[in-house]
Image (cartoon, rainbow, N blue to C red):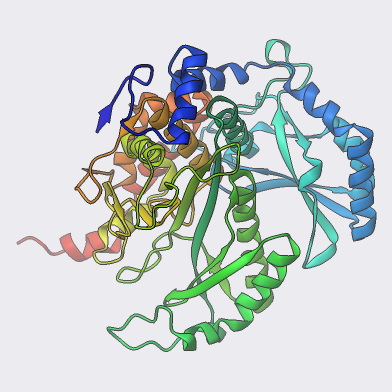
Length: 496
């Protein structure tokens, strides 16, 4: 992997995307990756952030538009939702008639909510404690939707801030808000590099229940067979119904393994894709209740069967709406120069990012089960399913390590920062198809890679990185303290 000086390097045949980056670098007089990193840090110290959000919320046009949507929908109650670090969502339910008040004042949450009230092995709260102050969650008016399974209930996403009364940090962004940080990071990619990241995710998941239990043939994989899709027909039809009502553009789906289906929607700017993934999980949970079955996003529920991944298909688009990952007029499978730098940045930083991409003990069982298409090395290839990054078609890079339990806001924030690093430093990846370095193979290894890597300390708010590290270090410690049946089978009568 080669890193060159972006202020002096020239390519033999510069394409428009490369030339645009060169001009931006010259105008800043320094490495764009450095500009990007410094701006991330400075925006966390912005004491006017809450006031700007409040001002935008109370604009007359904003208030009237939301009022009209609520009245037309018939919504009587609203969930004010905030994603947690563990990829769940927390919310307060408020009568819809109070929306004007909440646009201005927001709703307050106890700080532990963003950490799912998790305690360490000694019983101490992680990331916050009983003395921690509340934060304020400000609704984002354009994220309002009625829930299609109950038209009297709606939802609205919130960004979170430090309250006005908290002295030096008053009005600043809440550093533990993963969704707000992803949006902030992507905004900086647009501003510094002139690039927009689009993403499409592939959420695989397993459904279990008497009414949908398939009769499979031993030794054969049921992937793609219509008969098994037919068994899931009531499920996927209901999911599509709810997803379409919430603005998804559903495009395709398939049956992957016993009880496992993957339903996809069209790619979009990362802000929309991440919110839709979180919403999709809630849709599936609701559909499971309706059909008296279970829906699981556990990454590896069964050995010998496919794990549940959530591949991220990313691309970068310039200000003219051109996909910079492909060269104009080139038909054969390829990746542009700008795309190679972006891939170089992802590969370079991938060991540290694994704690985000594969964030549970169970996540790493995907990489130990042979023949199940889960990559274990930091590499890339052209339509190569063994690679961590697969160029499956011109114009997109499929990052294959994220799994079904991923926090999409954190994963996309780190991918954005990694491509900024790769493009800003002109990081050339290894040759396509060559064997890359090994990735962490357990949560414990991922914790150590994350702990000692400077990249994550600049790509994420340091306090968020520290809290996430503590949460996952504690999860690994809890797992290491559990006795399993495997140990009894191996050691109970191993001697003499």
